[in-house]
Length: 242
Image 1 (cartoon, rainbow, N blue to C red):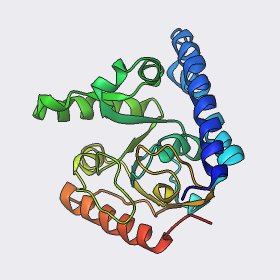
Image 2 (spheres, one colour):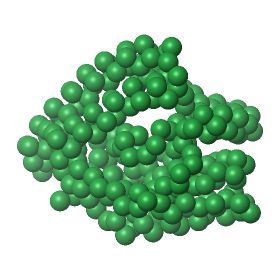
Image 3 (cartoon, helix red, strand yellow):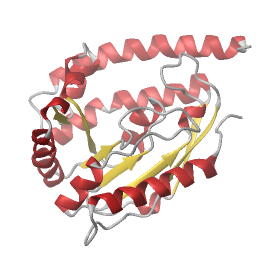
Image 4 (spheres, rainbow, N blue to C red):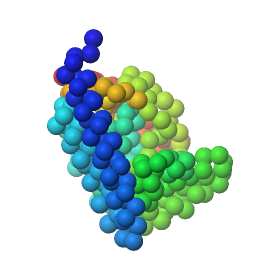
């Protein structure tokens, strides 16, 4: 049975998050004249506020280990994907970044409008080989602008204890551009499940692994090494619930 306090706090959080989303979507549109990095810093105030509200209201706390593993140069982050929490928190924990995402997301009212102002790498997944060319061209451009690239190799959120297929796209982009890959593991899904209304209290652990140099590696090998490290680390972290 769900404790009443968890339900009430989750409801309050959901209402505040919705209000902030509408307000910041409008602010995001107004940032259009500014440089990409300036737009990013303004728009991600929304993510910072939502992550902080989750901490204050729902008790969804976090701590980070391995922060010293982040390279000094823009890199490609390949992260475990369990919930919506990491899509927000990685904007707080990592340098300015862009995501690789399906183009359709930019059409979502309010959320998609704000997302479009953050210089994402938006690809048409139905385009086959042309989608890879789109990702490579846009990826090189964003790295040259000083952005990091964040990708979820499983493609969709996976429940705690489960493993999705690790698609090779992120590793392929790293090999093609000669960019270091930083694997990230966490246990956010044990507090904030996919599509779940309830947010349970606890402390999420975000573990940042040592950067992998793609030089001399094929994409499949790099992808395998990322998958092995992430899955072993997720198993080690266990549950975040208190």
